[in-house]
Image 1 (cartoon, one colour):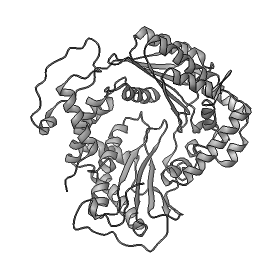
Image 2 (cartoon, one colour; image 1 turned 90 degrees about the vertical axis):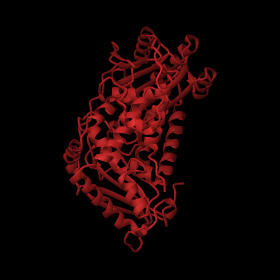
Image 3 (spheres, helix red, strand yellow; image 1 turned 60 degrees about the horizontal axis):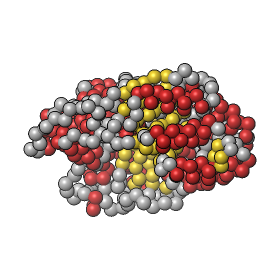
Image 4 (cartoon, helix red, strand yellow; image 1 turned 135 degrees about the vertical axis):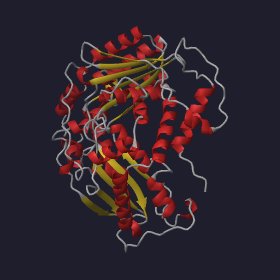
Length: 488
């Protein structure tokens, strides 16, 4: 069967397109050069990395808000993100407090109910969104036309939503009901259940163990005063990050950032969370009995924070181990044994030491054999490191990523948020450039500095059945999978 690495293929196509024609997002005043078309994909292997020319400008407002800005003039658009260090790790004794505070920002502002706010956003043709994780409880995005007659009222609305939330009794009642409903839906899905509700074995003594959306008991006890206090403290100017990307001048971006910052409650940044200790993790396998077709497996260890010097090496290792169809997990578990439809390794970029996860689903009769096989495979990676071919394949893929970075405002916005949150170098391609310098020995050293073959926290959920050895397929390909069903 012909195999393709989806990340690699898309990156190569993007690289070819970028080299062949100048994109519409090119910086104003940049010269357009004529490039001879490539004759074959093999030529890409010999191309030098081409870092983006986007200039990142950064400053702090007098109120203490960190700001990053990239100027683009290809389209008359403005993308804004405002992020607060206000995630579930700040819940304290009231799990779900951060999630409720965020949800209340969707319930209208002082003097304007939610319908009035939404109608105003719709009338301006805006695209808005928000989210929460363990580190960042207020994560708001807004896309607007850059024309002053549109962006000015749009940003005013955003300021009101962030700084003057409604804490009415009806709003709090609705939010509590919505969060309890979300908890029930997450309990029905293994991946979100493990991610949001089952962290204690990995983080038994750390705030990261808090359930993201609290518990039924804790949500019921949260008071209006607690929500107001949390908002004043966590949604303060000193605890905020503002990211601006789009059709603005530097002076316009500075003016916008000051207005957004000044509208927020005054206050300092919240203190960072201490790093969890890997030795506190409850190593071993926890099985949760559930009625399902497949057994879902999650392997986890505590990794490095995003700003650690070893993070890029660990990220590359995660791609090699479980980053696509050409990864080790897929070649062994899918192609050789046919016991999974997909398997993924992910390195989380949390503020403190986040998790390294391996996730997959398998028929229940292979649960124990798959657990043993994955552990042996990772032990081999620790012992030998990646092969030279594996490393070169990932480097080639990341060269394509360097061509993609800066292709859209939305991509730049997300990259800037990571840079600002983790105090990284002001470069959209820094991680890819670092990856080009990695050697097998460097990746092996990083893996062994942060992981241990015998320190897995494994969670499985599904039915308990008699166990079997892994099958060994004679013919490769997804059509040979005997039991593993596609997701959904």
